[in-house]
Amino acid sequence: MPYEIYLKKNEEKRIVAGHSWVYANEVARIENKDKNGSLATVFSSDGRFIGKGYINHASKILVRIFIRDGENDGKELYLKRIKAADDYRRRLGYDNCYRMVFAEADDLPALIVDRYGDVLVMQCLSLGIDMRKDMIVSCLAELFSPKAIYERSDVAVRKKEGLPESKGPLYGDAPDYVEICENGLKMLVDVKNGQKTGYFLDQKENRAAVRRYCRGADEVLDCFCNSGGFTLNAATEAKHVTACDISPLALKNVEDNAALNSFKNISTLCGDVFEVLRTFRQHKKKFDVVILDPPAFCKSADQVKDAYRGYRDINATAMKIVNSGGFLITCSCSHYMTMPLFEKMLIEAARQSGRTVRSVEVKTQAPDHPALLCAEETQYLKFFVLHIV
Image 1 (cartoon, rainbow, N blue to C red):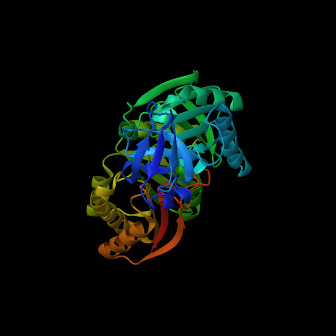
Image 2: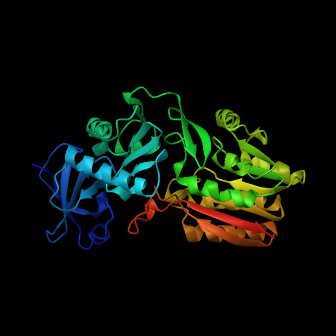
Image 3: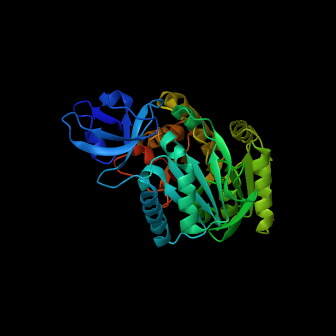
C-alpha cells in the first residue's frame, strides 16, 4: 500500500503555505509500505490531507510535495506542468536559451530543464525524478521535438539522495558545443562539460545590464569569467576587457566566443582570482570596472562564516583596484548568503577598503528562474552594482 506520512503537530504550516519539502525530523509516523521513490501521501497531525510527493528514506528531505489536489501522478501531469512552465517563458519573450523548468518554482521539485537552441539539458536531483527520467524525456520529445536531450546530473547534491552522479545522452545526438544567441551576442555552450548545464542562464539580464557601466571604460576586469558572458557584454562598450579564471578550458571558451563575435578587445588571464587581485593591488594596477561573479562560496549553512569572510576579503580588494568614479559589479549565487547578509558584507568590505561606495543597482536572477515567496531557497542570486566614488 502507498506510504502515508503523518506530520508532527504544527509542522504543516510551512508546507501548506506552498513549500514543497517535508523533512524527516518533521514526521511523527509513517504508515503502510511501498518502494523507495514511490508516491507518498502527507497528512497533518490531525489527519488533514496536505499533498503528495515522492518519498526517499535516504534523504533528509523525506518527501517533495508536488500534488496538492486530486491530480494523478503520471505522464499527463508532466506534460501539463512542463508545457505550462515553457509557456510562461515564451510569454516573457524567451525563445533561444532559457531555463524551461525550474524545479520547485514550476511545481516539479528536483527537475531542471534548460534550453540551448534545439538541445535540451536535463538535471534529475531526486530519487523520484530520477526513477521517472525516461517518462520525462518522452514528454520533452513529444512537446518540443528537440535535436537532442542531454543529462547533466553530475552534481554532488545527488549524493544526498543516495544517487550517483550521472551524465550522458538521453535522446538524439547532442553536439559538443551548441551555438546560442544571448543579448544579441553569439555564444558557444559546452553542454557536455561546461559548468552546471553548460552555461549560467540566470545572469542573462544582468550581463546585459553591465553594458551601461562599461560605457567609455578603458579597462574592465571580469573575474571568475567562466565562458565569457559578462566579458562579451562588457566588450561591446569598453576599450579593453581582461577575462580572468583559474580554468584554462573556460578561458579557451572565452577566446572562442570572442572570435565568434569578432571582438579584438578581449584578453585572458589564467590564475586564482584572490591572488590575481592581490597582485594588481601590490602593483597599483587599477580598472574602471571590476566584475566579480564567483561560484558559491558556501553550499551548506555551516560554511557561511568562512564564506562571509571570503566574500568580504575579495570584495574589499576589488574595491581598492577600482578607479575613482568606476564600478564594482559583484554577485553571489549561494542562497545561504542571504540578501541582508550579502549587503552587510559589502558594507564591511567598503569600510575595510577605505573607499566611499554607493549602491546604484540591485538585481536578482532572471525571470526564467522565478522564486517562490514561501521558499527562500529559490531566491538565491544577488547582483550589486557599486559606484566607487
